[in-house]
Length: 182
Image (cartoon, rainbow, N blue to C red):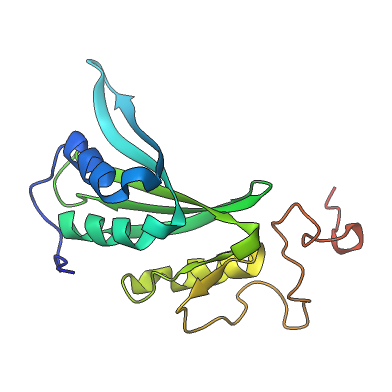
């Protein structure tokens, strides 16, 4: 897959990026929304965010496609226990070098069924994802296929790895593991 090694100076309009996402995700696309953050008078778009929700089978294809548009600047991952699935959110951006108001935030949300909490690692494509993937593994139980280092980051070495602190089901912490702070 051809990937531009540097930032581009000319950005695509948000609708072009949305069309690329639609083409790549196809029927795996669950939701797609463009949000604008307005500022000033007259009101103008200060920045825009694209929120994509898709099936995990298209996850890598979409990341690879976005990387052909511009250098995909990774920010962080977040996640949530949503009942039958754990949702992984990958927050990144495009067009960081194109000038004010042209940056495009991208959040890729992937619901991962609890019956198969695995998804490919982005580490070989975007090395900066390693710590976020390790955190999501440790806190939510997501297995990142191909992640070379799975050592814990935040929990003590003696922590029971079956307990996932951010989960709301039976794998979450028991009341005796929760410390009240106030």
